[in-house]
Length: 86
Image (cartoon, rainbow, N blue to C red; front, side, top):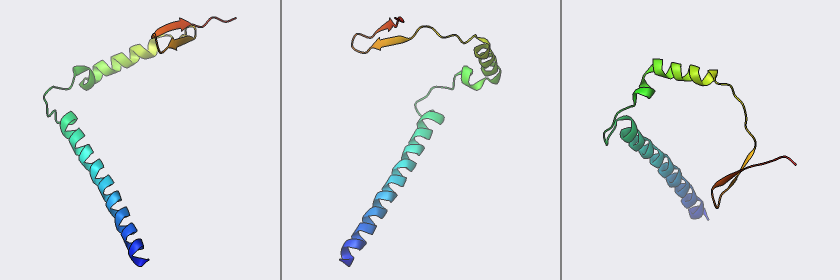
């Protein structure tokens, strides 16, 4: 029985280590592709310009928030139907 306990501990260690390693590799790949722009491209001005961001935020906060009638979507035909109260 001692061999079985040792094998289980080693297996758990390999699983935990491989999970941590896979998350580290995924993070590095994501950073390389998205932040370092590995495939080209640039960051849009709307994201990097603070003045634009503040003006947009002010505009969104100024809009009145009113709700329309409840809507049900039929997922098969992708049509929206307004729910009328009875």
